[in-house]
Image 1 (cartoon, rainbow, N blue to C red):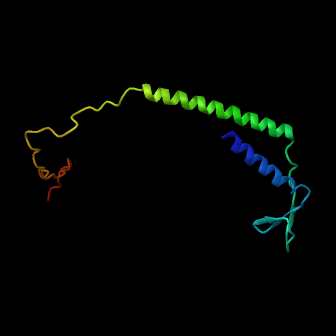
Image 2: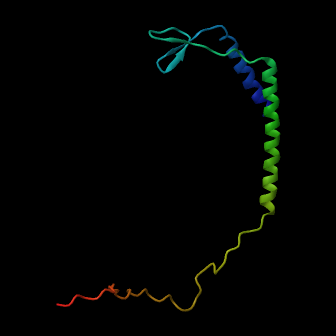
Image 3: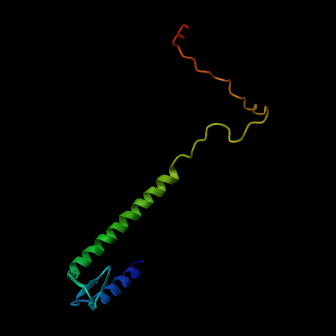
Length: 118
């Protein structure tokens, strides 16, 4: 996996090397190296130094190692975890059928207030 990443990084650095010193123009919502009507020159940051690139690579490798360790620990923890406990029967018990549902009894709300006399 490392050779692939190294190849990609080298290709990107080589491609960016030719762009040094060129002005970048913003034309509406797109960017390009050719000026356009109403285009604005955009300031681009200087390229990263070799020391910064090396430091970033080292940090990435350290992150990858730590992620691999964490994944290994997680897999071991999942392997040793207790199985799920299911309470109750897994299937419907044989025997009595379930009684049919009844209609609910009629309910009338009654006020506690006294009725006025006529």
